[in-house]
Image (cartoon, rainbow, N blue to C red; front, side):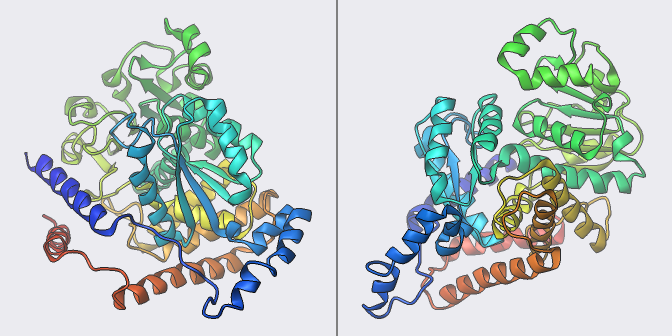
Length: 463
């Protein structure tokens, strides 16, 4: 009842505040507009000059317009949070919230763009049509398996970075957490026996990223709702036709370290060292007695929201050493917000054409290194959103890798990007603080502010 009550409070707070503010973002000028003659520069007749330049060389738009710092947050509303297929109107406040995180944590101008193009080809056509206006695309809340096809095809067709946060964002932060959890438990991540529970957007992307990181497929056992993926499953031909991404995993892993055997979560956890669940909300999806059969001092990430597949304390009681979840009120939150704002900050600053797996790995390693330098322990393997100095470091690592791989239009060093990212993110926060202090951004109603402050004090006291 307590968990339900807390959720209802947040819903009601959000309902009140969204109406109170009538949206979360707006567009403001960044140039002087105080005199009428200025408009002769920003618009007609002066704007014809840069317009001609941009027409002759489209890359000039990255210097003459906001494109260098602008992305579209795009969704068809077919899989929104835990709400499912609620449509573009239902998705809009979520995409707007994502845009707010992009600006607040990365200094990135992000525009929410929801649409009714449910057909994958129409979706892709939309992305191609809007490409000239943006420096990148963040895909969001798209149903599986359509999301895999759209991401793969968009990365081929567009000459700007395309990222699906439900796939690459979750995978990047999860990898960062696994790198540090492996260090804490004395493991070599590349040689560990890994189980991925759930074969949706997050874990299929994690599988790909683990491979790119150097983990052999034979070390990874992947389960969907019907059990372990392997070539001998009765539905393997159906998967080949309807879900080639699952089919590829089944063929490549041959069941992983478990081998081509039938079985579900209980069988897969027996002897596992690392488990990442990204399946359906619990509790009880993963049972304590199953976890007890893992190797000693195991690692378990239960990432379902709003309730993880198993409560963290149950996993600990069963012998797990390091537990991560998707929630901010438990230790070791696997939070996409650690990745997508700084990664886009980095790729935009070097005008990258794509985001490669190696760039995502560089970002994950930067996150992991930051936490390691702060001091790893069982309840701290990842930075938190409030550790703002991590974001420029992730941006710099991503940008440097883009330059190294030859996918950047601008050549900047790690040190140069670190300085640029720090300046942009700091400037964004200073602008906000100035507007807030001046009363141009309204304060929260007092009762909501008191409730939030109370929750913060509870977290700090450990209750």
